[in-house]
Length: 204
Figure (tube, rainbow, N blue to C red):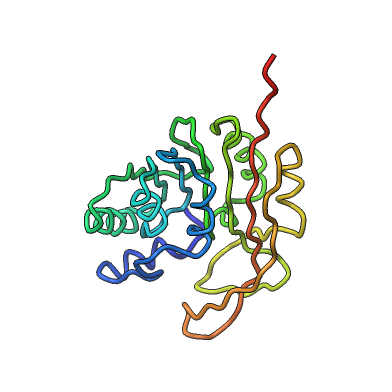
């Protein structure tokens, strides 16, 4: 069973987009790194707003989520924008689509994957990435902890992603605080916005 409460929330609100219809600011920033026609994998795509945004920019997008209700909303959003996205219902910790990808992207998702499973996940994600491709993640960190809707999170520690990607070129590693009120109480989460690029092997 997923440790995230959002699959339950997507099912509870079939006609409402909890996170809105427009892309996240992080997705807009990451878009600038992508070549035309880039192949994008989003982990934990939820209701699809960022996957659909990448598709409207001409990318070939695969969105993965455990929630059938979330993917149903994502499919409607894609149709409304006249784009095609490959939606995959799966637990990314156990099952990943075949690559290669120019971008592996997640926004507020992979901190729900238990730490021991994440240790195996990141090498697999790197192996699915083309030389010169990028990974971009927004993760919750342990600087400020607020538990909502019974979620269970393995918070990232400061510098954890930098260590995981020590063999890549780190383009962005920024702590931030984000405002939230999804449980009815205004609060903030500490996050890290992280982008790294695979180093291309020198040609012989």
